[in-house]
Amino acid sequence: MNQDVLKAKQDLINEVCEDVKASTTVVLFEYRGLSVSKLTELRRSLLKSGSKVCVFKNTLTKKAFESLNHNEFADSLKGPNAIMFAKDFSDSLKVLTKFAKRNEEVQIKAGLVEGKYLEKDKVLEVSKLPDKNGLLSMILSVLEAPIRNVACAVKAVSEKQ
Image (cartoon, rainbow, N blue to C red; front, side, top):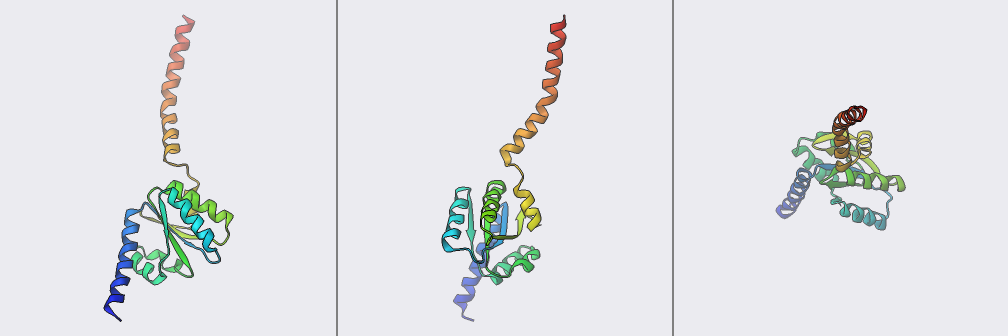
């Protein structure tokens, strides 16, 4: 094979590796039958949430994941696949799963969240989790409850006297 072609393929593999390393969430999904305008709509909506969607050859994607010790993706890399790279898992996953519900052509296959491989069902479960701000407010309300209860008890005692 021509050296330029080999270098171009290696550059693509390196690009996939860099995108995976820079992302907290990576989702592999099939888009067979999806029109170009719908795929563009998905790309734009994901871009608003700080994510990007790329399409690479499956063989190059497989080599990239193997070089990152994520051989689990090998079985999923069949057919026309796209990869979503996201810095924040919550917003991007919500956008992708809502889009997949409206467009049955989009089939989520697998993903990486915080470096852990997740199959389709687990990716869908993670997409239902609240975002970071929602989780922080839940934690704060749990931490605040005992203090509020003590304050109410002290106030009740002081009002009795």
